[in-house]
Amino acid sequence: MRMRHVELNLARLHQLGMVTQEGGRTAVAEDFRIIKRPLLRNARGDHETPAVHHGNLIVVTSAMPGEGKTYCAVNLAMSIAMEMDITVLLVDADVARPSVLKVLGLQPEPGLMDILLGDKTGLADVILRTNVPTLSLLPAGRANKHATELLASRNMRQLLTEIAERYADRIVIFDSPPLLMTTEAGVLAGQMGQVLLVVESERTSQHAVTEALRHLERCPHVHLIYNKSTAFPGTEYHGYYD
View 1 (cartoon, rainbow, N blue to C red):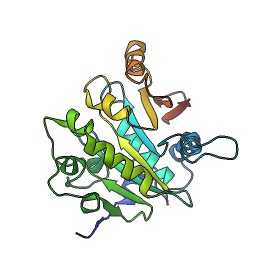
View 2 (cartoon, helix red, strand yellow):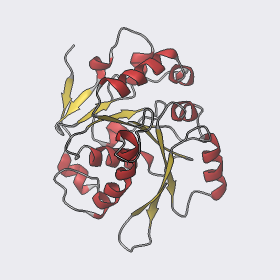
View 3 (tube, rainbow, N blue to C red):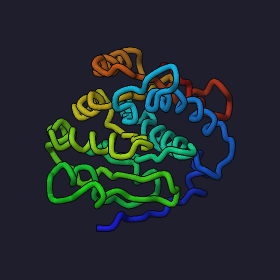
């Protein structure tokens, strides 16, 4: 099966305040330039620091729904796709409530769950190429009541190894379920090289953040985004904490 191609309406995404290649130096684009730099350093290493194991696998999650994790995952993927020598695969791993394709204005498609269910669907069958040459998508696929077990399965570990190691220049961004709402999120985060925890300003309680971080105790590289801050009137500020 040939890899499918989908068209992203980049003008629409720009109007929605998203990062796009032709969108110019907006405040959001500048925020995600700052956010992506340490993630890329961990993923690729430099002359001072070796790369993190599977550091090119980055999961974006939150404590609770509605904190902006999908928005951040899409913007991060778009921003990293602007790098000169990197390709990006954006994976919708919020398999119970997938929203990446909806945010991008696309219809649901087969994807991650279909691969893990072992119905002779391969990675190349479900990856969607886009009109952003360095950005591809892996949809969530059909819902399954055994999603946690599937994400913890040998098939998933093998898939992650293939995704992480097959292309040296690939960064993979996973949009995960919220940590305090499902068990899938913790299982997924435990298999990643880096975790990005989105915290909504003035809404997420300190208790929720503490509990979310407790779920990530085994993850050595956790970063926080302070999202939707109104510190600057008329803007949404995305603070970054390592």
